[in-house]
Length: 374
Image 1 (tube, rainbow, N blue to C red):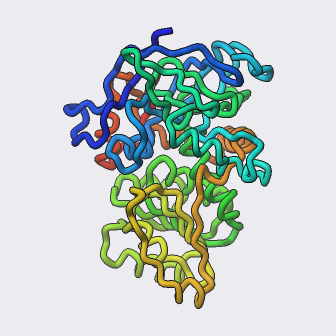
Image 2: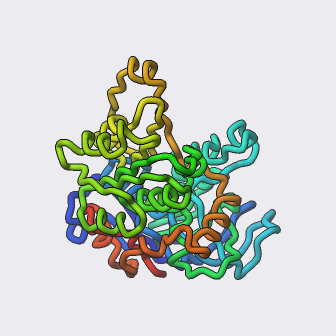
């Protein structure tokens, strides 16, 4: 079948993207689903900083590629071997398929699935196939999803069935922003009530982490960002203090507020200065957790004597250390009960043709979670 899709043909385009047009809306051929795969009509797709990192080259991926990894839609057709979904089912798509058979999957850590990571890096589906074609040539899949299109073929293991009454725009956020940010707090950090926390970087993931720290009962929540409007929203959403990360004495302010630093600092900006600041504001015996993804060539200087002498912990968190089929329904229920007001994070609704302008908004730092409606 022919679909409309936003195709990235080269990386490293210069901003403004509304002029350089790194994403071109093209008519792409989509093959039917193979064994263990599903054809999904995409209804909503969130714009994430990870997509922007592919466009800029900070997150290298093979091109040409149909971008997009945070979305919700409805099942149109099930391939052979898919027996637990049917036409019309509503699904949230997840950007790390899990094989269920490798060592991380068997240990209950599907976010670290080895075949899933390999297929994502290669630009294929979990099966190793490419179902997208342009001008007779194969087109790569973006982390097994490629949702900046009106239809997508994905692995069944990239789908979580959506049973809750939720709009597609709301549901799409649970595929990445909420899953990653909330999971970093609940799964990776296992943040306890009565502790103190800081969140650096208030994008969709960072704000989701902020909501989770509040829901977990943290006694102090410090939010840091460069954008004053986002800091104001953070105060409305439960932050007990906000600090502009550009302030030269930002670390000293946090340490003074928290009497020596926070129990857990969450770095969500994907930038080395944010990582360094997160480390500096973590107390003795505390944990620094990063869910940001800077360019793979970037390095962070860590003083080992501090790591040992202060019994500090530095951890990564990928997809919020999630078990998506377990966590997405849980987080949706928390949202419906008012514990995670992720609807406050929603930005503009965009048409597919406006997608480059949406990434300009993201690059400027002003955007919330803009969503392409299809």
